[in-house]
Length: 246
Ligand code: SF4
Image 1 (tube, rainbow, N blue to C red):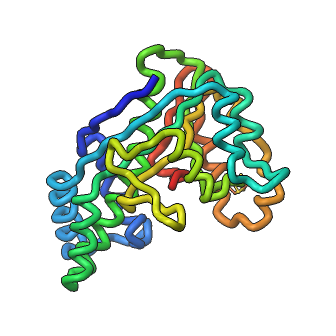
Image 2 (cartoon, rainbow, N blue to C red; image 1 turned 90 degrees about the horizontal axis):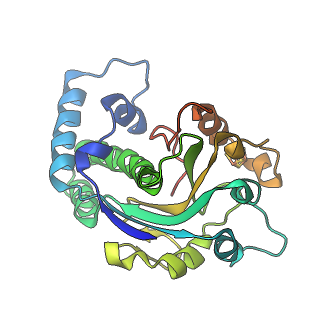
């Protein structure tokens, strides 16, 4: 199954608190009136200019293994070597908030309006993460199963090298929604996400973060992600507050 999804910008609009924190405003600080005005201006701009779109394509475990290990060093592993074998369904995905919004952010900085640019950048980043959640919902909505939790895993995280984007893009070909890959394996538009959606029983997403590559990890976001999973009564989809996608 391959699907292209057009998403309403309001559906991926982050909360004001999420945006403030992403923009560097400490969570325990009361924002000034000027800050709140800028935030509202950025939200209006986001709702006008964001054009969220995503594509997903289901594939078999064997097909995913081929994509995942293409370009990985010999003997390399990632968390997906533990999680993916327990998946009920797997789908490659890519999604973006759109180039016009990214261009607007660049223009704001170029014209010296960094404060508004900063808030719009923060909104776009949080929205891109939320977009992964929307695509994850789309994977399971046709055949809902309350036992399944969907999480997104991306190249660049937890043992899957960022260069893994090349094999992912070769297989998924998200050019039809306007996402391309540069020389350094960075996506354009910049505010894009990609990876694999893993639909599995909640317990399949839980593991001990004791891989070799975990030694250098300081943020340990896997713990927060695992804490968001509810089992077995309700599905837990990707949370916008726990970015683990690129
Ligand atoms: S500790 Fe860090 S690198 Fe290891 S699985 Fe968790 S988030 Fe990934």
